[in-house]
Image (cartoon, rainbow, N blue to C red):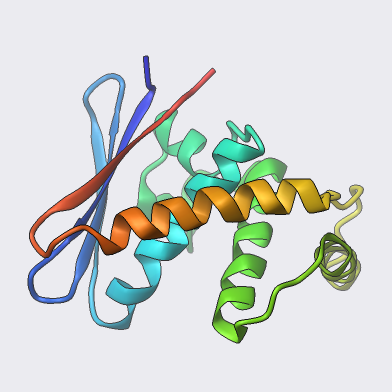
Length: 166
């Protein structure tokens, strides 16, 4: 049984809305207007691809499943610092977003080099994660499937995904 149901609605006015329903029935949601309505659905789908392929359960969607609200992921950080896995997922998703925006395709070596630089510049004292070319291929494949599904969603409808929890 899925611990979290993720729903991204494509509104008729060009906006989008993300809602996440937990196993206990509670919901957190966010409306994404203007440029955010174009950017965030793909960003959120990229999170889903990264977190399911790499089996991260303490990143964005895993934290939402345990009771975090979408608004907890930003200042003033009411839940405190995110777990390391959530930071790693956000970094990978951010790199994939940058890759998509630049229309470039980075190798695992590129990702790992950029991650090491990020860790060094931000004085993160843990060992940076290492992705393989296979990891990236599986993430990109899943993300492509999700993007295709999103493109087929008609305005007023939504894509719905299940996120497994432990």
